Amino acid sequence: MLFKGPTSYVYAALAASTVIFIAPAHSGPLRDLFKNDLKSIPDATKLSQQERQSTQELTRAINYETRGDNRKALSLHKAIVRDYPLSSAASTSQFKIGELYKITGKQNKAFDALQQFIENYTGSPFFKDALRYQYEIAKEGQTGDSTKMILGIIPRKTQTSDLLKWHGKIINNAPHSEYAPLSQFAIAQIYESEEKSSMAISAYQALVDKYPKHPKSAEAQFKIGAISKSEITRGSQDFGNITSARDAMEDVIVAYKDSQRADQARQALAQFNLIEADRLYEIGRFYEKQERYRSAIVYYEKVLTFKASRHIADAQQRHATLLKKVAPPKTDNTES
Image 1 (tube, rainbow, N blue to C red):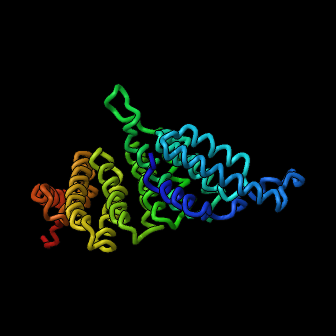
Image 2 (cartoon, helix red, strand yellow; image 1 turned 180 degrees about the vertical axis):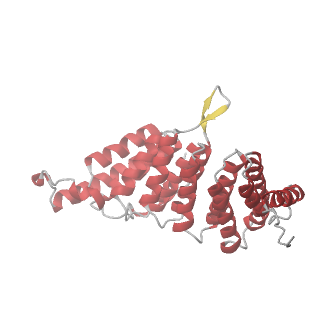
Image 3 (cartoon, rainbow, N blue to C red; image 1 turned 30 degrees about the horizontal axis):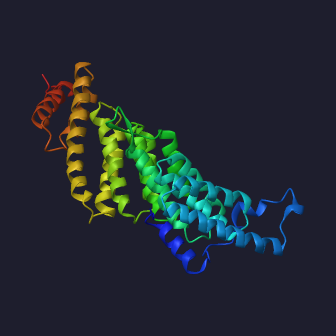
């Protein structure tokens, strides 16, 4: 079966002229291949011979793959990379190794093979395809691999450590590619799903800082506020969470006013005001019970600034009552 994608145009190029349009194989770490054994460096004649042989072997490998014999194709591609590392065919074969592992469901091996390709053959026209494959592998691992089921019904997910490593490598491989911000967003999602709030917020913030104009940045900014809000609703007494949540939502409204999240951010801000009013009222009641009336008055005054609070009437009454309690007694200055 002819695999749709990079395979098809590799085969087309081979069928047309046997010319492989790739970067020289000596780019990247392959420059150091013979650094400890200079005598083994092939001369020009041998390199030319290896180029012809490797191209013939690559044609055979592609033919096997076209016929659906991926096992033989994979074996030949590995042999080309091993036996003809300086040939132009080696870069194509290294890419094909990753591709074949991917389509046969061996995602860990596929990612590693593609990583080796990316590190060694940065000038290859398949570089973007290798990045795309890596991102697809990481995302499939994040949502669950449908080819590997638990009890026959639940897609098996890749370990978190592998997912974080994969997305991190994608970012490092090409920080200005279309996949780098997507991987940064995925890293934040992983931390959020693991309930590692501070790390998720940091990862979302990194996306906003590095790629402020990316479509995912508005979502990331909103997520920062949403995570802080979730900490509040879980009972956190840290007013810093309210401040962080409010700041994040205000940033969404200002920086991403045309995004779908802007209206939701406005609604969230209103909710934060009510949450903060509840917290302030509870603190005021605490101080009142402790007979620390002046402190209670301060917090009731703060509640009164939130006109939509359900505590507004009670806080106003308690505020007035406590003011009378702490007011100094009037002195009678009239002479007898």
